[in-house]
Image 1 (cartoon, helix red, strand yellow):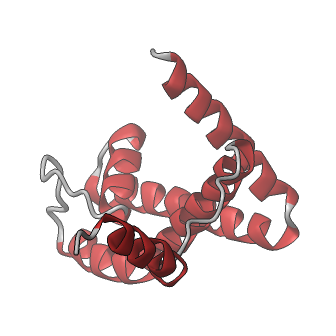
Image 2 (tube, rainbow, N blue to C red):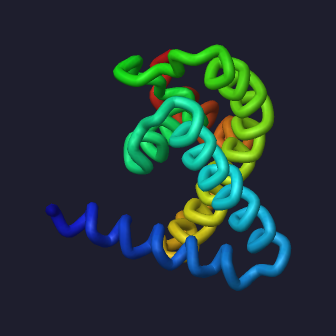
Length: 137
């Protein structure tokens, strides 16, 4: 694995631990864990899938990837999926957004600050002076 990928994974791990230190985000992390665990267990019971297949289906469903290799075959499983997606998708989207926000803040802190770019209004005097200097009358 290349070094930049390892650095990214290390930073992501650090971000996850930061989320667990914050009391409010800890509740969100716990809610995500509970929703994923509950979905895994319900699919295991309703569809008779292994726990690993149930976890796999839960994650690809809530992240809206949906490869299509697994799908509920029972009416109860289909009904559960409808309710589960409506509840779990917003929760997981909020969690992913929070992780991305924290990751971005952490990356911004590690990068050197860039000087503010000048605006076109600030450069207009320089441009007109250059044009006047270059004009031949």
